[in-house]
Length: 395
Image (cartoon, one colour):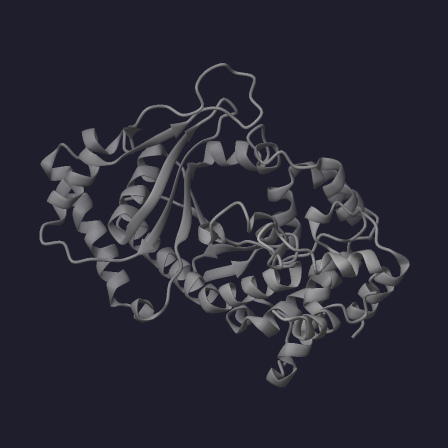
């Protein structure tokens, strides 16, 4: 980007936000090759394009998957399964841009009652998706799960039973044992292990194999009948775990905040200052119901991501101080929905969106993103920044 275009970009990006000379010079920082590093606004623009292009098809796939689960449930192959979908927020995405691929922006979590049901859905994924990479976790904290990323690709199988037997016999992956800050001297990664432990024995019975194959075939046929195959679909990250492990992962010793080594003090200060905002520095999460996906309650999202916030959330609620935070979330939801029409059916705003205001709303949302990036390690805003943010919420 040449200097004149960057000047214009910065001017539009920082409208209403006062930058000192040092901050301004940071936009022009060069890397070792002498070319300009992408700055935060450009990275955010890139993520907007990525989510705009692929977010709708991701949620369509998740809705489809939920209907496939209903087929399995009605056939009594599985019981109740908790399905959640996640789109990474801008702050987390920007933090990971230089260290991770974009294959974890869109994620689905499936929580089953038993290990058998978990492996049934893992098998379904191997049939419905081209698995790009996978891994098993068997950590000291109690986090036992299977993760895989896949490209939606339902195929015709001449003999589904034979295909299933090949998958069960050949699927192997790495197993991770230690947590990030474990003092254990055991190796973190094991040699290759079998992906499936229960199903090979269960399905060695030809009658049982036939029964399960018929249900999986119904699920696959339903998936292939939909128009989603005409869409551009992202790689999706899947997590499979049991309800017992899910408890440890959301409320116990294997929680996300422990695994990610989160700065607890920083997150608490952001929350107490009303600066945790859905889609900006907290993920967009959806939960499946019999009628399809719904947006998860924001406070539930916060407690899943950061269980240590529970006491602060309850205290704010009891004091009636959570109303302003939820109003901010509602306002930012509308700004986000201006950019991503596929989100509008999940946001109960009653808002009539004016498409000619899309870019203006994007400038406003981008300012909020920059002011509230968690990776800035900045817990309080300058008075000028605070005024700019307050003005945004009253536009």
